[in-house]
Every structure is written in C-alpha cells, then in structure tokens.
Image (cartoon, rainbow, N blue to C red; front, side, top):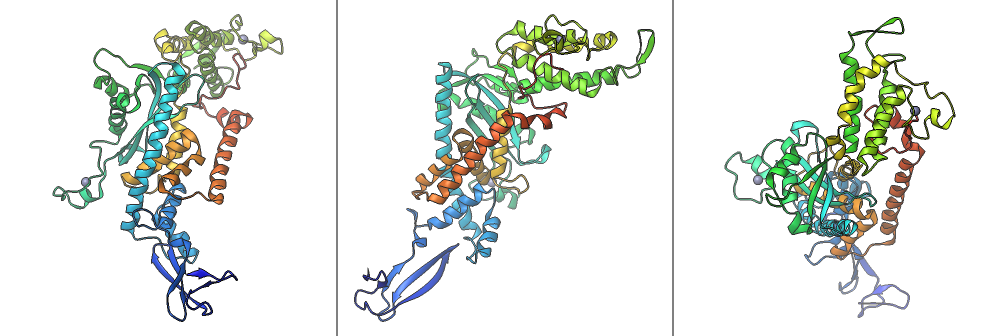
Length: 487
Ligand SMILES: [Zn+2]
Ligand SMILES: [Zn+2]
C-alpha cells in the first residue's frame, strides 16, 4: 500500500482505482474503517482507532473505561454517551469487567508508588522512621448496611501537607458467593471482610499498621483519630511493632473542639429547671438571652479550638488560653489576646460577659476540657480534615448511590490516592503504564482540574469559607480567621 502524490491512498498495483471504504463495528465503541482497492480488494489502510495493546485488546475501549471511572460512572454511563454519539455501545459486561480488572492492576501500581513516596517524604520531614499519621474510615453507605468501606491513613506533620500513605479497601460482598449460598464453586472471591460494616475500619486499620514496616519502611507510632476509636484499640491490641512498642493516641482537634459545644449544650439542658438568683432577680436555667444562648456556645467552641491550635506544642499556653475564654466572660482580661476589645481599646470588652451563676455552672466543662491528659493528645494541633477531603475524592470517582464490587471501588481509591497526593495531572502516568500517549486535549483537561483544585483550596483559606461555618455549632475546626478574645 502506498500514498499517491495527491495524498490519496491507493493500491500499489492499481493506483488509479478508487478505494472502497467499509466500516466494521468490531468490539465496543471501536469501529474499523477499511480502505480496500476497488479493483483487486487488497487492504490499503485501516484507521487508527483499531490500535491494540500488548494483550491484543483495543486501547480505545480501555480509554473509554478509564475516562468513565474518572467521571465517576459505570458501563451504563459509557453506553449512554456512546450511543448518543452514534457509536456502538461499549464492550459486553464481561469484557468491561476485564478492562476494570486490568485498570485496577495498573492504577494500583501508580497509587502504590505515590504512597511509597509519601512515606519517604514523611520520614524525611521528621528525620525519623517513626511518624505521626491521621487515621479514619469511610463507608459507601451510612450505617451498618454498607458492604463496602475504606480505611485511610494519611501522614501528618506540622508544616507539610498530609499525603495518603496507605489504604485498605474492604468489602463484605462477592457476586459469586451471593449466587450460591454455601456451596459456591472455587472462585476468585472478592470478599475480604467478614462481620459488620462498623468493624471494617478496625480490620482495615490493623492490616495497614501490620504491614507498615514491610511496605513503607516506617512505624506509625502516633495515631491521630477521633475520641472513642475502636480501631485504635484494635491496632494497639494487635501490637504491630512488638509488645515493647506502644502506639500513642492523639486526638483530632476538630473532634475535641466539638465536645465543647456538645458539653455546653447539655449543661444548658441539665440546668433547665434550676433556679438562680442574681442581682436581686430570679433566673430559671442558664440558657437564653443574656445567658448561654446558641451563638455564645458556638463562639466559645470556636475560641476553644483556636486556643488549642494557637499553642501547638505548648501545653501551659494552651491551658491558659482556654481559661482566658472563661475569664473574659467574667470581665477579667488579664490573659486575653490583642483582639479582645478590652486589651486593644476598640470597644467594650465586657459587652459579652456572662452572669457569674452561668459561669459557675459551666466551670466543670472548662475543667474537663483543659485537663492535661487531654491537652497532651492535642499538642500536635492536627485534625482528620485531610482524611475527610480524601474520602470526598474517593466518592467522586465512585458514586455512593450505586453499589459496586471491590474491584471498582479499589479503582476509585487508587485514582483518588494519585489525585490527592500528586494532583489530577499525575493520573496521566496511568496512560504511560498502558503505553498510550496522552493527547493535548487530555493533558489540558487534567491540568484544568488541578487548576480548579488549587483555586478552591485558596477560596477556602480566604474569606469565602467563613459564612457557612459560622452558622453551625459543630463547625469544622480549620478556620484560623477568628482571633483569641474576638467574641
Ligand atoms: Zn466469593
Ligand atoms: Zn478579654
């Protein structure tokens, strides 16, 4: 076959015969355009769409499958798009499953490399192979009905952004097992969890800790997690680093901060029937106007969080700043910060003071929440916010609304790891593994997503994040805009 000087394709023996063009749907959305000599029938050329990979599979179908995952969709999504474009539907369900499995393998290589690098960076940051990690779990569905969950571990350091260092995808479902009750034939079972959805985080976390030395070359000696973490107790009991090495529990400042609001609210509830006399008048309860109303409780909770986060590594300072909140409400401003109106002289520092009978009732809350044993676990000032953001990315690649098997969830998690650690653009390294070149449009598209990501992070750090949080008592703790004494 050859091209004539005019650029037209032609048969070498019959250059003047016009080619016959046939279109053959062959597999999935792939259509092969064939140019044959109209005189002798020899194949002159076929189109690029029919490129195949090393496994003799059409790369275009794999590309469609990968694009569908990144859009958070499924085969049905791809079918809707393909037929609207006038293309044949995607490959059959069983072929699609093969593509998923293949992509799972490839993405797990890319994700694993990324997590290994995260471990190296974390070790470098503290110059120690014993590191601090924040741990959390996420489920595809709320409550105990979830058959899929993920345990996630993210590095934590004072001045470096956290990165995902390990994940464990848990599933209590297997398609084959569910078809045959107890007598399922030998099969590649996708179930890797027995028991309740609640115990998924626990099991996953133990697995992650037990392989940390072997897989990441590090020990996770500080466990940052929420209050009554069953997963932490299980990890501790598993003694992943031997009986002589203890793992320290650190508290998520966000969760501790919420306790302030919860405890104050329940104090108000407890005191509802109680009578107080103050300044010659009788008062029922400690809630309501001029006393402990919801916005005051919210302000105290925010201040409490700030007192912790502004005193990272300084236990005494933390304690002093927490009590400064109480004293400020009692018109004593000796420990107030410069943003207290009584200190900077911009206004009436006592405008928001509380009656002493209210302060006396809430004093025990301050005592509990300023205990050294608790504050010690908050000295790092960290939260599980990173885990929460990472979980959001996972579920953007795998909708919570449609049940999936483990392979599909693992794919989403792998992509989320790369996205969270290195940016969306780095998902193109999956294409390197697949030996598919990344076109300009795709590169632009991925880059655009990273650009948006950076943009929205900046927005959150700026002014726009405040309004939404202000209204909620159980607000997220990553808001540094309030200053001590500003209530
Ligand atoms: Zn099975
Ligand atoms: Zn003050």
